Length: 248
Image (cartoon, rainbow, N blue to C red; front, side, top):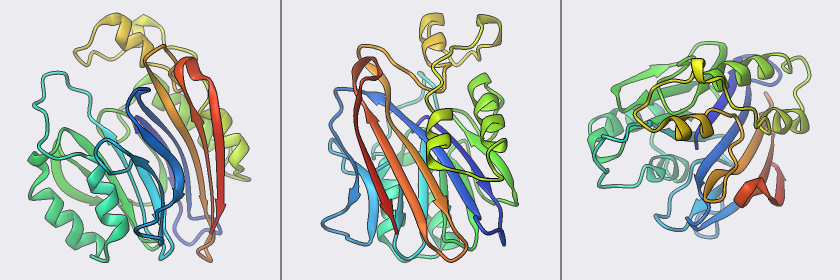
């Protein structure tokens, strides 16, 4: 997952609104959003290479999502980052205990940003500074750096989300995720990749022959615990592959 914008509004009629794009090589095998056969209380996509996931929910109110931290010089992790989402969704450990445990072994993974929630609170953990943070009310964003790092696409996506909060709809959330406009060269971050790659990765929606946005997800959580979960999936050059929707 390479872009997540979300509104956390405790005590609101719709406390959690999420719009997220998963960016990955098209050749990496994955399954779209579905109910997991071996853990039927979990609804998430599935990375078939390592077995984890990038974003999902459980019927008991859990939510988790992940982005990678972009650093071409970082060592490869011994474990897949997608395990961090899957373990929380399938487990029953409290958020505080789970993040304390993950913080103690963060160096087993490549750089990551992790969001976890249980319907009552929402927490953030970064491998760059593994001190769990309980989030207050607000609109937030994650790309491939720390929370709310003002990369152009994150600033744009957060503004688009904020404009929808009076009446959030999955179709509008998915539309904001479809913006393929790249940022001007003068506004690009320097993450250690080539200028051409930095430009390609600067759009909210990424499309190329080999790498790009594989899934766009909209999640709306209501105060009564009901949720609307919609995912669009894509292939090379951004070709549309399918759509899945669950109302839980």
